[in-house]
Length: 113
Length: 115
Image 1 (cartoon, chains in turn orange, blue):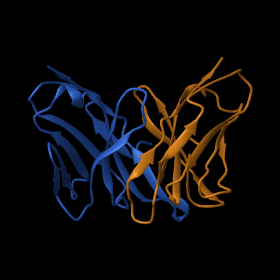
Image 2: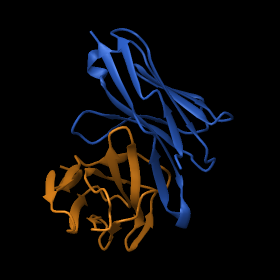
Image 3: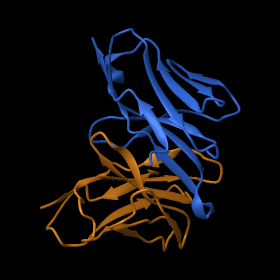
Image 4: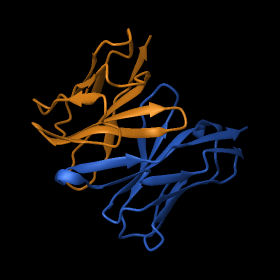
């Protein structure tokens, strides 16, 4: 099945620890995105990438880091510098180059205690 | 800085009624305007999308109206059904800084359709 896979679905971490969220797609999409969803805040863009080895900061990049070493993978690291990391994180991909449909994963709910 | 403003935040309609959700944008570089539907605990899924060269697009009970001069677009759901109860997000896409394509979302509208 083609699609975008996020893992794990639920993640618990202690405050002060870095944590990496996985996002893999087999749609051969060039563009990938990470969003954070909080109640009443909608989807806020953290980072986005158009091609391998290149990515751009979104609106709320502070405290997060990403890499794009492979076309199909776009992992997000939530660092200890992120002041309020507990949230629902969504990864998406699209073919890009002309604004086409974005496909979302099922999300990872991160809880930091 | 919110690039896409969406209203209302919540909406309650009766079965068979019309649901209307509005969005406004500022960046004239945006050239693609999708609407996404999200059910609890799931990722959003594309519902319908429009480009600025047309003023209206209809797919079944869902219609997007687009006003380029006012930089506004709206989603109309005709004959609303309880199964339409979900959160709806408008979005806008265009080339951001660095030349990469950027997709930004409104804050969402929680729609409840009463039977």
